[in-house]
Length: 309
Image (cartoon, rainbow, N blue to C red; front, side):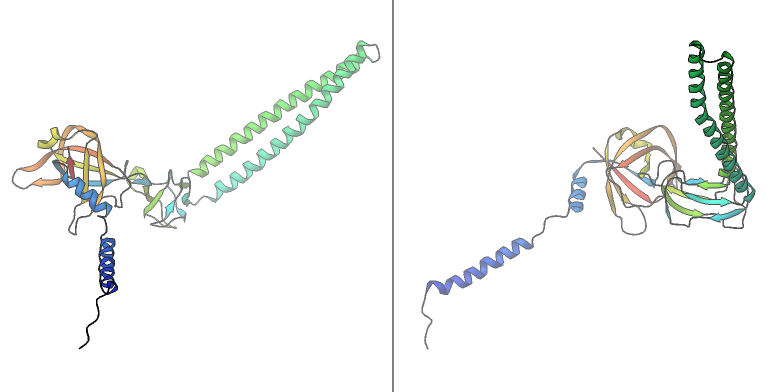
């Protein structure tokens, strides 16, 4: 049997293979993901209190209805649709109001044209009156002609004032008709998402005074947490305190972005999210928290809040 003679290259190949394997193993060691690292950091902070809470939008959902009662002519949006401020949501039937608005617009244009024509004549009349006055002073024209020219200027100024008043009246009339027409239309007061449409074309629109809502809008505002802190923990929580928030439900809890306390209620209330079956309703202090960054959550979602030192 022949043996392979020892040479330096005989050992270089296995060593190179081992080094490559070690480098590959080191490259495959990934750093701790940021959310997990943040969760570990939060867990390491001392927890001084816990509370149950709910995700809310400041001011709540907007229940919208037309300013007056009437038959719905058009519903311009559908549930789940994103809308911009001022966008039409629905319109009530009112053809007569539309015709009145067209007439008022025509009257305003006519009054404005009449006023403009009279305003254009006035400078020429004033120049003529000035020239005649100079001629009379120089003895080159009769005083009566100068007086007639001055009277023409005064008449033109009066007609101009009258036409201005007519235009103002026409403008007020149009504004009045447009105001009546606007009562037939419902527009979005701000950007948001249509959560519910409570009517349809051919139905009578519900009135807000009767507790109804034609359209329910979720305004595009930063979500907050309204937490119910047991009164025994009230002294442990203060404005500016850091907190971690997780979803609270039947499924696996999910961590939401960190939050901080912005308000602690000065009064005690009765808990709505927690009850003691033996002692009855729980006395709580309401806390409001803002997220450090926008969370991926739904309004009305139940959460657990852990307050840290």
